[in-house]
Length: 100
Image (cartoon, rainbow, N blue to C red; front, side, top):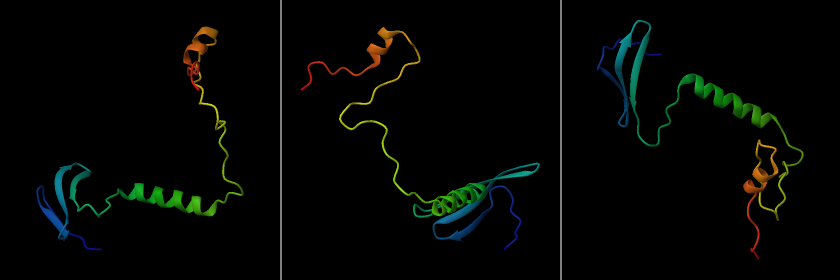
């Protein structure tokens, strides 16, 4: 690991398309700006670790059958209302009258 000191506005160049600039320094934190080309993915370490952990979990789990849809295919989905009043329920259901 390369350890270097930088001041505000100084930069570190990684390749032709990637550089890191020290933007701010506060007590115990440093704010960095990262310029990277469109093909370079930049993630915070904890985000990358979480993504890798989720990917490992997904790879370890197995499905015997794919999940089935709970909605029937020939009917349009219905909108649910928190109100129990019948007129409000009718108003939220999709209009199907006059359709072929």
